[in-house]
Length: 134
Image (cartoon, rainbow, N blue to C red):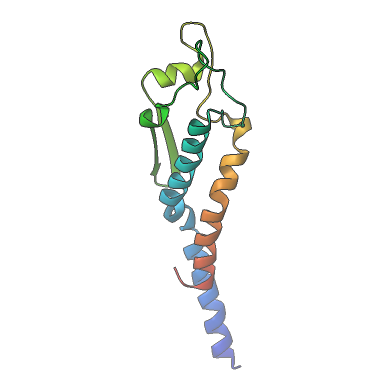
């Protein structure tokens, strides 16, 4: 391999590394979808982000069945925003009659499962850039 060929390969790798810096922003919409799927699954199962079951309603039913309708998850640049509205937000904080908290959005200490759900998305995007496919 000539010096020119070697320099061209090094230059191409440097360009791929620079492009990889955009991987987080490019992956953000897919990450938002993965997070939404994870949160929807928790709501359907009636558990908080840590997997702990929500307290049943007073008549023994699974609570907050419609919470997914008041949840939005979207990407703004490289930031993922999850927003809960309506009375479901009050349940999340326990600001309801009876004071029962049924957490829907994760706290900082509960991010593990959600981070694992997004890891593959980000790693695929990064690998695409490092291979030069992106």
